[in-house]
Image (cartoon, rainbow, N blue to C red; front, side, top):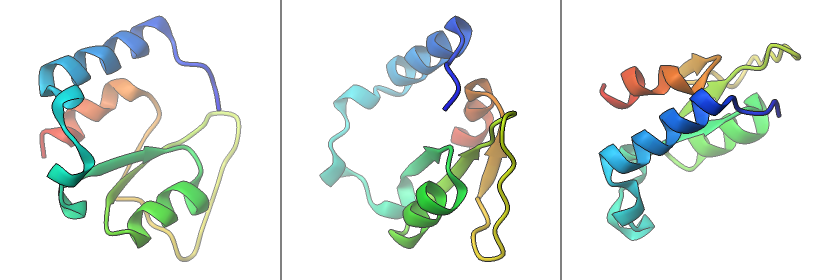
Length: 88
C-alpha cells in the first residue's frame, strides 16, 4: 500500500474527530451503517461486502485491479475523497 501524505493523514484525523469515531464501539454499529475502506479489491472489498458492509476501494496508482464479481460501492484515489462518501 502506498504511504499516506501528511495532508491525507490530517484529513483522516479530522474525520475521526469530527465524527467522534473514537467513541463508537463495534457493537454500536449495524453492518449496513458501517463503511469499510480497503486497497485490495477482492480480499478487502469483497470480504467487507460479504459481511454486509458498504465498501470503498482505495485504488492504487501503482496497480490496477479488476474483478468480475466484486464491485465496490465507491472508488477513491485519495482519502480526502471519503468525506463526500461518508456524508451520503
